[in-house]
Image (cartoon, rainbow, N blue to C red; front, top):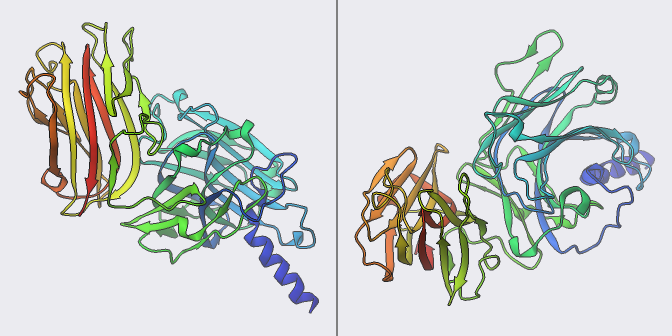
Length: 455
């Protein structure tokens, strides 16, 4: 009976394993009903040493932690509910100052989350990695050996730890883990804005390459998952003190060769996968749904503005002759694309003074709607519907398809513009983002009544 009691305690603590993760010095008590539902999962298999790799695209928001890490709960901790005793290696994307080019690496072991070698990685320090981490899919990885841990982004090393305690204290096989959750530690990751929920992190695949002291890293993975199903994973169904959410298995969504982990308010549902609409009647683009604002202006002395005027989205840039930049708002989601998926919207190109009517490359328009689509090979295509009264031409530049209407009347609404997405990107299976705005020198435009539907 004593052996059985000990086994039960070990199993319970395994479910509570993440209580070792990122707690405050004085963690708050766990609530029976927290205000959010989060998503997370870990491999059924454990790995000792090796290279751990994922290809992921997170939404980066204040107050939210996106974790790619390994974890082991030491079994000698079964006797106490008030101790943590774990081994862990972390790559954590936190965003306290809305800086999407930074994240944190660390490892830790033992009691009360004593982190070691905490490093704030800034991608601006690497000339080939100067991007926002939520702009698209990228490869993140770390190598764990007996003598060092090194972290990588797109195969470029960004951080390394070589202290002796790695060999002495990180010795047990660990689970490969992925999650998204809201932290109570606002000093660490900022405060959550409910209006920005729900948000998610998407994973394309995960791999592990074994390492041995005599042979180094294998060139062939011993674990690879394309996320066609959940056979290799256990979904989280617990919480821990520093997490202001309960992990909910339904917030882990396997679909189309991706896994999406969701964070949402407790009383809401995961967004529909086939429809999106916004008519801006609430007079605001920062909630219901939330759009991110990008004023442009890089290299210019002025930036553009965006607001809602009489229930219509309005973009404007003035006093910037000869300097072409874009102003836009963006909304991220995960919408399935079928043969019936269409987008419709109303649009009005009010003014533009850019040279040659649409810029020297025919890519600057006073009003546009842009969709980012993905195919089964994880290749992206942007479709940009552009409206002008001063000319332009439809063309493709790299992965962007410019669908141009060059001769519509100035400052006249073009109503119920409707397009079937597979007419332009026949292999697309999902949409990850919509942009609306304008581009050029001085410009002004409106967009309204956006609807994406597969019905």
